[in-house]
Image 1 (cartoon, rainbow, N blue to C red):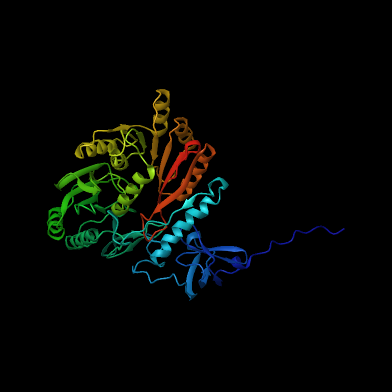
Image 2 (image 1 turned 60 degrees about the vertical axis):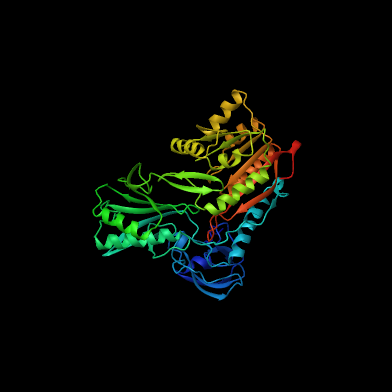
Length: 471
């Protein structure tokens, strides 16, 4: 009997040659807005393409995974395709959807949430409302962070190419505020003129690392933060004079000292070198203080719209006591306070709690309390002490809620849970857990907080099934 021989493994056509040129048709978009096509049962992710487009790509098997597919030609354009208004779109990792008309961007985000809900049978009855879009989907960001680098003799600033630390040099970013664009150009010219030592992350030499700009989109107040390795920055007074002459509403200028070898942009020490220690932003009738490290939603216009919708959809009453988890600087708590008896905010950042208390004082709001604490531990303490809340509001980070937090929240038996989410996938995962405990939602209301990107914010009101009202 002849010895059995193992057949050689069949090598796929897509990996046989060093570079394979492929003609294919884009079938759909993935969660991050990239086109998805198929070639001999292989799934191809092709960034900056749209469904229905016929394209030619090259496959480079020896490159890092994210760089293996290179779009070479679009043979048939989608009617939804537009020419990206930004000349840096093809290289920069900041925006993902500029090649798609704005109405289609909004529909993509709506369909993304719908698709995720369909993965859970209990959530399929939920309606996804049309996405609330921006009146002007450009120049909307109230916070800008740009690294400075030096290549040869050239000083530049920009955004990192997706997944790398390579800065794509830019002169103007059309999603940052116009003031921020002016400030960046002014400080670049200053750095060139005075030969300011630019930080090199490889050698850990140099001084100027980042420029951070914060702007009140309704108040027009501007804060500039120069992130440096040492406060001994040469010619900083010349920079200050240039800023004062080019930025009419300049309010605050800081040094932030970041001497560490770290990807974290801001260090722990802030030095006010001119102006006020904070700027203010106005959201509806409320003023909020913003310091260098203060977390605040980057889109003030959409924040106002979301809060107005939250107040309406939450159907609050004057006798309610509301718990606001992850309360930050008190934005939601203060906005809800005018409709309810009392609001208690829980936040794990001491700096944010202090800012929230100050914001309550500035706005003369007396029916809110803010406490420093962990959300899970605080929920357990409230239950142990017999406290109850008719409504609990959660606005967690992108990772969503833990299973423990959800169980402890449900144990308090609130009538309503208001969930503000910046991540549709973790939102839907958490909604399924709530549904298993008889908290149901009728509608997810999305908001385009980040136009030109795949990110989407959303608001969902859940009610106990036995006392469910239209939400």
